[in-house]
Image (tube, rainbow, N blue to C red; front, side, top):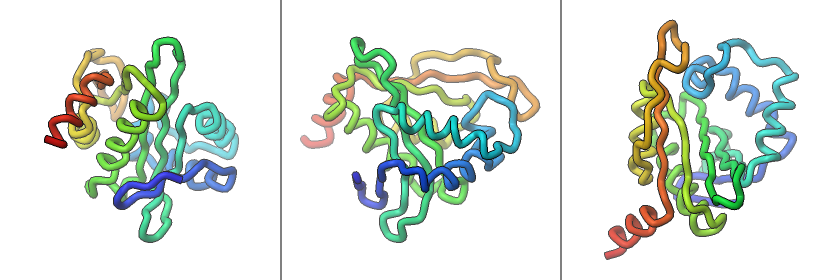
Length: 180
């Protein structure tokens, strides 16, 4: 188990599937986390969630350190080992939004990805309307890399998808500034 100031990043277990299903069944979460149909996810969706967590290079259940309460999940998938290019994802239950938990978990994951997984870059995609997430990613050092215009139909309108990334050298530079 890994920790930050306020969070526990726990290994995924089968017992977490009910919490993960609850997370992915929240309409506010679905609206920001998927380009697929917004619909209730049944027990069969647990197979997808299990696969996503088990196939992740780093996958963890996020819990509050103080209470152990489930608040979300975090994953890094490295599909191209040779290029050391990871894809980052995080989902939190809405009642935990606006408390800095996403930023805290993202900062941990950036450092862990470069220091211990040995990545060259960490990438993500985010809806352009998700200002809260974009701000958290920028605080952790991610930079805007591109925009796919009107690419996702969500919330009864076309939405741009943004691509953000951080390189190992940028993370090292940010660290050197922090510790001067």
